[in-house]
Length: 313
Image 1 (cartoon, helix red, strand yellow):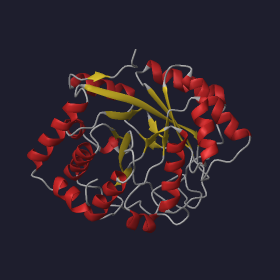
Image 2: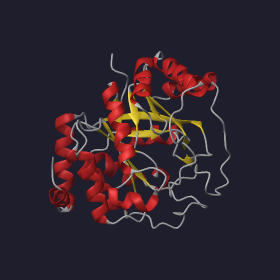
Image 3: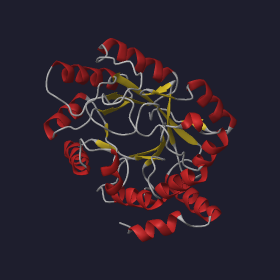
Image 4: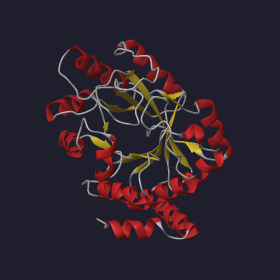
C-alpha cells in the first residue's frame, strides 16, 4: 500500500509521463480498445433521510425532484432487457435508502436481482447500508457487485455528510466482502475538496483489502437546491490526473467514468480512456442526473475505433 506522499508524487508527475505510465499499466492488465457499458437504474427515487450535500435525492433539500416509490419488478426487468440490447453487460440498481430494511421491499429487490442475473448480466446494487445477513441474501440471489462509495477523504466527508459516518461506509464494504460479493467504491470530484483531500481519498481506497474491483470516478453534477449548487467545476486536466492515478494504483480494477459526463467533451472522455478508464455508465439518466445516452456513447466508441465489451462466453 502506497503512502499519501507516494500517491501525490504519482499524481503530480509531468502530464505526458503520468499518461504514459497509466496507459502502460492499463495495457498490461486490460485490452485498451475495450469499454464496458453499464446501466444504472433508479429503482426508488428521492425522499432519502440522509443529508449528503451533493445529492438531489435528499428529503432535506428542495430540488424539484419527483419522489417515486420502489418500482415494480416487471418494469425493472424491462429496463434491464433494453439495457442489454443496447450493449450493457452490467445492470446496476440504486434505491434512495439510508439502509436496507427487512420486509416486502427488500424481498422485491431480491426478486429483481434474480431476474436480471437470469438474463446473463452482471448485477450490481446500491441500497445504502447493509448488514452481513442482507449481503449474503443479495449474493445468494445472484448479485455480483455492491456499490458503496467512500465519496472523498475522511476529513472532507465530515463537511458534506453528518447522518452517516465514514466508518459506517467502511463497515458496509466489509459486510459485502464477507458475503463474497465484489466491491464497487469510488468518489466524487469537484465538491470543493482540496487537492490533498483527493490524495487522501485515493489513499483510503488503497487501504481496502482486497482492492475494489470497480472504482467509479464521478464529477459533481451541481443541482439547484442542494448546498453544492454553486460548486466550482474541477478543471478537466485535474480530472484526468485522478483517472490516471487511480489506474496506476488499481491496475486490475475497472476505472469507471460515472456522473458528470454531460459536461465533458468527447476529447476529454477520450483522454480519460487513454489514462486508463475502461468502463462507463450509459443511458439517458444516471439515477436522477442527465447522462449522454446510448446513441452518443455508441457514436463516441465508434469514432475512437474502440469496442463495446461483450459478455464473456
